[in-house]
Image 1: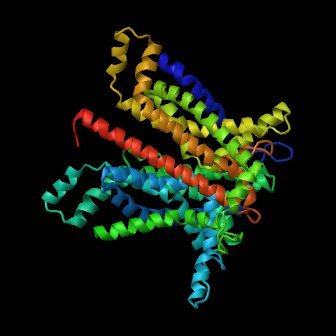
Image 2: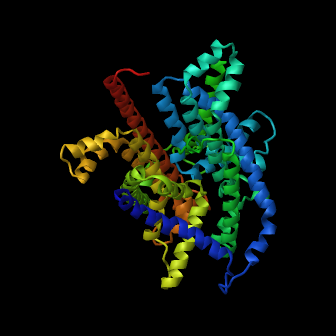
Image 3: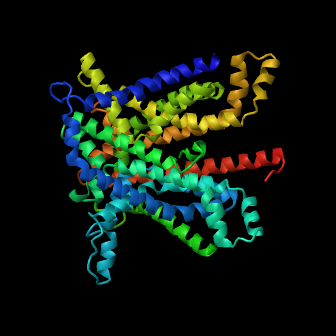
Length: 271
Length: 271
């Protein structure tokens, strides 16, 4: 009884401002932008955006994989320092996230552009300037840079909680360093890997701005298209249809990834 | 091996902080191009403090963040207590509701709320509905899950006999809550508030979709700035904000460290 009274305002709020808006997205996706009548035209038009969808997924998966490769050793190193250092380092991992991602992305532009910081060093050495910007690589770099903390934090949380006695037991039973890692530590960090990959993939696949600044017209992402439908092309109905498809796609991906973990509770690690 | 992983970790931290260094250096630059350092000056900071409109935007951001995180903390703490006492279907339904904004990409949250507001506006015949109130509602909505997910673990850790003891000793249920439970879960409430506040202060994607020209926050205006050559006083503002957050976080970290040590001593060393 008491718990219901305490929950009521929250449930009411979330229903009005989370559930109903998703219903409104569906409504807009199935109506015409001018007449407001039911139509499937918005969804039929989505075929033209298939290459952009595929590119977004492809670039985000690569970014998530790179984040995992870079983030795992870092999370492992942090988890093996003293508690004092652990607190300080895990805070320093998250700190960049508190700063404007627009300006941080602009700083990367200043570094990578043809007359940028890196290329002026390269030309000072007498070499030709490198094509560092406006390609798939620079978009991936921007995403890895922006979302790496989302990978390190859940990995660190999971690795830190691994019982050191399990590692000692494996060593006592004759495992060498590599076997301890592949047979004990790595399997136990799977929940962290899953939630890290999810937490990088979801914002990466839906990102806008990064590809506008670091990419070219050939690297447009689905987030950029949605943004333009709302802000410049003024076709919110098409934007809603695109958002709907992206949302369903992400739910499928999350569902697919969660199948690798049998324990859902541990899979949900929040920043 | 250990040495290699330490060096690698240092390099990754350098990678995470390079854009901050570039922006900080740019704030002392006499030129306006981030990529070319012309000479040293402090005048960007003087220009920053003379720019009333920029400081007003910062003020807007702070007002929204404080209001949204305070309301979200009160609503979220109530909901967490209710959720802690709830069982079965109700609990899992509310947890699902809480996870929706966490798993939905920011752009979908922003777009769905924007459509809800547009829909409400067209029904109520309000021309420009987007502004302070829509922004506040959106910020409260995305802050709520952070508060709940940081208070809930503290409630689980709490000794369940505490509340019964307080009731036995003659507390009314509300006295038991304010004097005993709230006291025990306070660290979770405070960290939930802090998390909500920082998320709010830096939010660009959701704010961008749900606010109009009548009320603009700093991150949204920075986006407008980045479409044209950006004035270096923005870099000065970024540098000052970065240093403020860095100092705040380090201080909080040291305080937490002291607190953790004290608790460890009080309970006898367990580790």
